[in-house]
Image 1 (cartoon, rainbow, N blue to C red):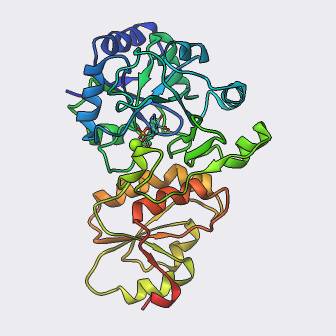
Image 2: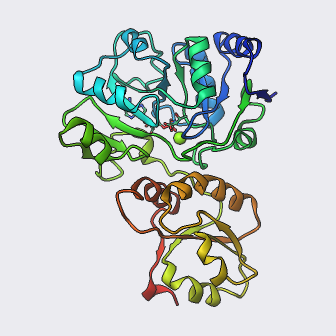
Image 3: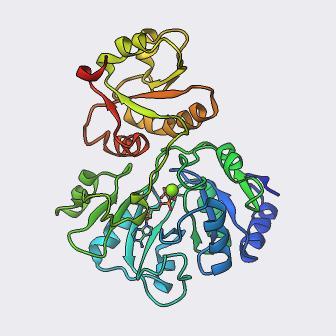
Amino acid sequence: SAEELDSPETAEKLEEIKTALAYGEIIGLPTETVYGLAGDARNPEAIQKIFQAKGRPQDNPLIVHIHSIDQLEEFAEIPDERVLKLMRTFWPGPISFILPLKGDHIAAKTVADLRSVAVRMPSHPVGLKILEYTGIPLAAPSANISGKPSPTDYRHVVDDLKGKMYGVVNSTPADYGIESTVLDCTTFPYQIARPGEIKKSDLERVLDSEIKVHEGDASQPISPGMKYKHYAPKQPLVLIEGIVMAQTLAAEKEGRKIGVIAPESFREVVPEEVEFISLCQKEDDYREAAKNLYGALRKMDKSDVDMIYIYRFRETPFSAALLNRIYKATGDVMIKGDKAN
Ligand code: TXA
Ligand code: MG
């Protein structure tokens, strides 16, 4: 039965978590991106529990979380000094590196039988403290049921996984709200497999060389998880241009109950009977929008609206990660000005 674990301020609570993990239990772990569902990456039984609890396809590998670069010695190759430089610059923080796997320390299930492994050192003080105290490399995918939005609040973890884990650490809401950047370092130039808070330009500034962004078709993902539908609420979710918001919603009046997820400034153009959730105060505050996105999708999912419109943010390097998640959630269904009526 799932319990909420108080955020471990004391050695006693840390000891309880350590014991649970050592016995192959899985726990909800706070990180600065989203909550993870963590288990010992070396223990196939713990890993099996993670896949089962999430309903995750077995061919989708997990990210292994660490507290020190030295831990990599046991299970991954650092291909060259440049990768080390990136780790030293951005860790602890919201970026994962895919590295060549070494030895058999990590369970084959953790990496879905690949010969590479994704690793991350999170900056969330509680998550990091648990990694330090236990010393266990923790495999942790996002702590949601597969296909649902990732959890940004410990209550989301309870909603999805109650009864399927030892417990969730009830800490603060996630700072960033979308998952880490995933950088594939098994080939050169390194390639962004999943966009996140750490952007191409941030990486290029440190390396002084080119970083590629993977934009292949969905059938050839370098990050296996990217091929699955993600982050979607139960209702149809449609992108909408701000400019046609008012007229589209006016035309929708009859019959269906509509939800709108958009920046605060749209509240006033939305009819009163529409369920409105604000993502951010300013239209270009992509960070605030990212932080609130999954919570908004979850709230709509629980509500009685029949369909949801979500505001189409402008495309800039700063909105890339946010738009990536929104496009995946909508499946690119979109209303443009000319199709509004
Ligand atoms: O921010 C995050 O990364 C969160 C927190 C909990 O750390 N974790 C997370 O894990 O988002 P998950 O499992 O939901 O997403 C991991 C992504 C998937 O798209 C997976 O396919 C990819 O990373 N991945 C993991 N290992 C890989 C590998 N060896 N090769 C290619 N892709 C890999
Ligand atoms: Mg996930």
